[in-house]
Length: 336
Length: 273
Ligand SMILES: [Zn+2]
Ligand SMILES: [Zn+2]
Image (cartoon, rainbow over all chains, first blue to last red):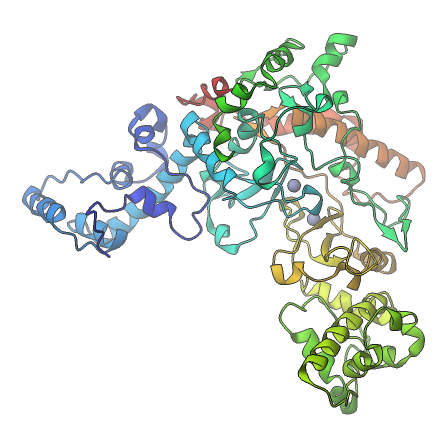
């Protein structure tokens, strides 16, 4: 198992290359080493310090047997006879009792997952996830009317141990069980509730109506360049609406809504024909109608309380649209 | 459905279903049920299929295990291919008969067609269906009666099957014939959030959809038709559309450290654009 370079694979890259861990990004050490990013995690993980050291491949500071540790360090430097992740950690921690080691191992995985949840919502992390998205690492929507739209890994909870990872489809705004059972042991909290929606707000120029290599297209069609509440009209659930709602038929005749087995769920896949109906900010500005659902996210990713200034985000976006720089600025051009 | 004789009763028929036994038990053919001998031998059921299939008579002979043509491998393969196509075309007709529906229902109950991938459907069993009744147009899809939507089969060995072998009507007829099997409908849904806050554009769409649902339920109530929704998530969502939205907001900031702590980087995300 020795590598010619002599530099062993880090704990993080070993973790991310495990079967079933394909959705994970490699969190940068820089992010982990900034204590600020780990705020509050100490209390969530047992043997926190040891777990953190394991993740960062740092030698533990052991008071009792410094000499042993020293010897090992030398061995580590010269030796190329490494046998994998487990072997390496066993040796490094050989002074610890085995049960401790397995606790640290699982703590490290938990801690990494919790850090990962935060990392993929940071600038560097979401960028890394967008690269994985472009490479289709997260699969496509199983819904026929979504035409293979690429999905994003999400959690339904931010608390570990509650549910496994799911796939969020930006085209139908729904969540699906990953097709492969190997993902059904991955904790959803390691991706969290925020990442999926934040991704859409961060990369508004992805053309979600395209799949494969075409998903980044020129913003040329005027009717779809309308910006509504911080999102392009054509990116608001492109898989929903007219022609994308299943109509049950028997021998060519539509099954009536009044039949016991008639359609009851079409609302879930519907969308107004005229998407600007959803532009509540504009409507608010026009007819002054009040709406008390006031806590939501504006395009800048900051939570805003109270009604946004109507039209503000729209103006901001339109100033940028059509410019190739606007697309490059979010780094999503790498595929083209 | 229950109590119907699902198996061909006499040993003679066991022998005669050799080709069909082999066919439906082959890998990739899990969606098909076995067509009765009786159905196949009634010419009336096969009306019009002779022009759809090459070497129709040989193909039918193969399906009914009376094929005895002495021919080369190439010819045999052509007839074999025709037989599979013919079986599919007959299958589309058979599964909307009383016995065919009952057989497919048994398979449905055993999850032979898989489970709905939509999280909120909680693994509801699927049914195979076609988007066209004309062969060679569209591959088979899977219908979920809970969300009333259609999905692509997970496995490539199923995604190559012709949808016309199941047709556009079968799954809808099944629930018309067995209305008790219509699953309870649910308003449970996913709402995209960022740090506990709903995304504006998506939230506006959700509100619009909920209004549409409330209108439908009003129409149904007026006509005294059962809506199929749980009584509990019934009345109030019509009375007060915003209420369930507000409930969803409650679990947001406080208990979740992620929502309180502003990570370095998180605030910068916006400036990326
Ligand atoms: Zn979708
Ligand atoms: Zn479903």
